Amino acid sequence: MNFKLLTFYLLIALFVACAPQTTKEVVEVVKESTPPLTAEEKMCRTFSQLGNRSEEALTAFVLYKDQVKMGNFEEAYPLWKQAFSLAPKADGRKTYHYDDGVKIYAHMFNKSTSEEEKSMWVDSVKYLYQRRKMCYGDEAVLSAREGFDMYYTFKKSVSDSYILDLFKVASDSLGQEIPYYAINPFSAMLVNMMGNKSIESSVASKYALILLDAIEYGNETCGTECEPWIIINGYALDRLEALEGYPDFYPCEYYSEKYYPEFLANNTDCEIIEKVGIRLRRGGCSLEGEELQAISEAYKANCKSENTITKGPLSEAYRFYRNGDYANAITKFDEYLSTETDPEKSAKTQLIVAKIYYRDIKNFPLARKYARKAASSKPNWGEPYILIGKLYASSGPICGPGTGWDSQIVTWPAIDKWQYAKKIDSSVAGEANKLINTYAKYMPAIEEVFSRPNVKEGGPFYVGCWIKENTSVRAAK
Image 1 (cartoon, rainbow, N blue to C red):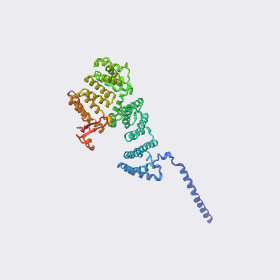
Image 2: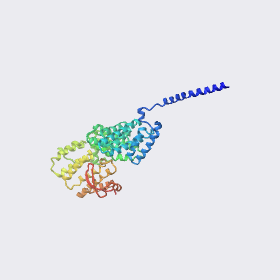
Image 3: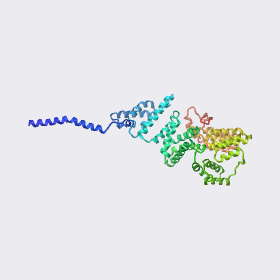
Image 4: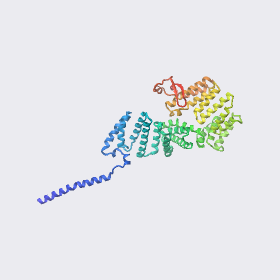
């Protein structure tokens, strides 16, 4: 009996002695199945991968989110850094840390006083986007988003080429499906860079055509969410149309698709016939093609040329213009003006040049310059001021985003010009009144006027942009 008990106790002792070894082996197996995160994986670590530090990261996350919601970005910053360093990818799905990081960095950028500081915050935003692309992929969409942020928030500290490259990456990959928010800034950049000759015309043309396709596609597929496209239609289309002023920028197909339907709907209107013919020839459309042949026949049947001059610079100017060669046309008009001594003839020609700059080349400052010359050559003539008013009223997409305050205040100096035109020349009163009534409703709302510091209805106001004129504040009725 004692021998059996002794044997039993020895077996228990043996089991206990062996147990730790068995547990150790199990632990080692578990460790081998969940190896430590690599350096790259740590850069995209989530809350669930933090182990016993997950609570610390979640607490920092909740606290900084509260501060961001209240606009306390400086208080949020150290908490955000803690949450981001621990779990850059948050829950693995949402992009909270990156979205909030850009907001915080933008705040720091805006309060910085030195270019060195501003540059540091911009570099921080660039780094955030690099990390985000690494962790979430979708480089094309994120490039569009980064380009948007760089253009609207950090533009003064970022080169145009850097922003342009971001938009190019997005459009090269996404084509007509480029995000809507990239279209307006990308359009503005193409126009501005063509203006300062910092982009090749062929490159700008390629992307302008992609953007036009994207706008058409967006309007067709927006369904019940078309509000962003209304804004885009009121801005980007005007900016991209301005590029028609550059020779060989758009191909024949562009002009044909855009303008030929206007001719088909108005094939006895001489102004339309001439305009569409000029546009198609501008695009290099074949003179023997069906469309230009139809336009030519319509012109012969319905229109009589007012230009009876058969030789000299004025004749050459009209010939160049009808062929869509605006630059040479203006050169010849200027050559004619340099010798013309009749003020009436000079004024009419100067106004023609002003209209070419307005309608065809889309260079508003030069259009105003020639309109002012026309007004000086022929005092008390209202037509030049009608045109200047149109220039100002059409400047919403140039001086602002196409909607809102900056795009609406251009109506004030425009109406000033139309009021002056009918004051000095009763023959233009009808057109002036029509324009005033049309654009009065586009003035800022009274609530918008009241919300502006140091601005009151009827008070003085200086409109900057390219207009640079004093006017008075008025609200839409």
